[in-house]
Image (cartoon, rainbow, N blue to C red):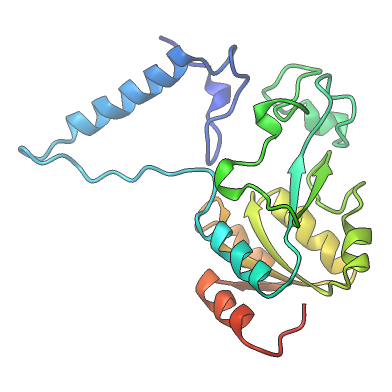
Length: 219
């Protein structure tokens, strides 16, 4: 089976479900991976394999700690019209995508626009829907944070080369004290974290959790 090369990205496999990504596609990728592992057998010992996921487990722990302090948790997610007409990216950028014209990977009302089950928002959390990269771009996020009296943002998610970067820089321009949680972002160990560290604080989960749990910290 020949797989479309456009579904293989820097840090994931992405395409249109039912067209570019099907049950047969998943089976072929799994079979190829298993074949590679089998070919690398060392005697009777199988190689050690690591299976990754798109959400970082530390995100839920951070959210729980923030809630425990009585601080707000805000989820920012992509949700666009099925025809993609509300995508705020420039046409030149959209033209570089593998998706056909007028098709979006995060159409409202589909699973592609849902938040993963492990990070399901709680009743008192806030959810902001965006149409582009930045969480602040054409969204009420800035107004929401101002209403909540927020001065500091702890940023998690992905990707550090796209949405995280755009949100961080917009937040800094609006005067927020931004901290990026390095091991709660993806791609894992991204070199772009070094770029972000020139502009804001980049720290590990354990260090931030210790600070959040301490007394006297402002939100």
